[in-house]
Image (tube, rainbow, N blue to C red; front, top):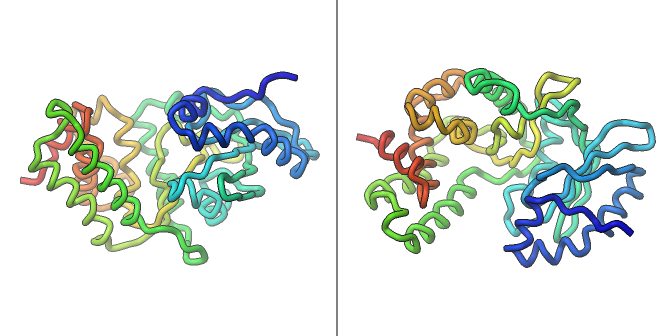
Length: 296
């Protein structure tokens, strides 16, 4: 019997996370049970795959092209509300969710498959990616979300701020940003979610690798990590992935993305400063971005 294939990124996570390693031992049975439950024929998992999930192409009894995603559930994990977010968006700018299953240690999603499935980041130059990202975000934000109790962005920022402070205390001097900038940036990271004028359903992790070419629409969002909060936050991850432009002129990049997405440019810049501080440990690029965007 052939060995159960574990994608590279998931195997790397298992090597450093005992909980994931234990979960993987039961994964063949989980995947087999889901294939029987949903009448699926499965292909080899996508490589290198996700860090905490096993994802593979699937075909159901009708011949529909689908994706089976089986993920490990970390306590308080960002992926908790992926299924709920996809239900709210209902295929409007994001992949459709066909079925979902949850357990204490994991979850499974049966999703529409994007064909050809090429990531946006491999197809278009970054300035053109900006337009696609901003257009998709506007559509995602427009959906009413009151029917489900999504977590507030402030909760995520509070956790990340605490992790930054612990990491900053443990880092060597060479990996730290200036203490004054660290205090200002992480205080702002905690404050910004509480001062937003609007609260929308956020994707929080939208970038060129999480937008795939499809037939139903030119581009569809995958792997959202939904929270409710300030729309100006949602342009950040794309900007962080545009490292050359971020290094060249972070203020101009923030202003461009704010204009395209229709959010306040000053808030987008402040968010980028705060997030750069939060990401600054052992990152010379993020330290430089934070220094250049620091409030006067």
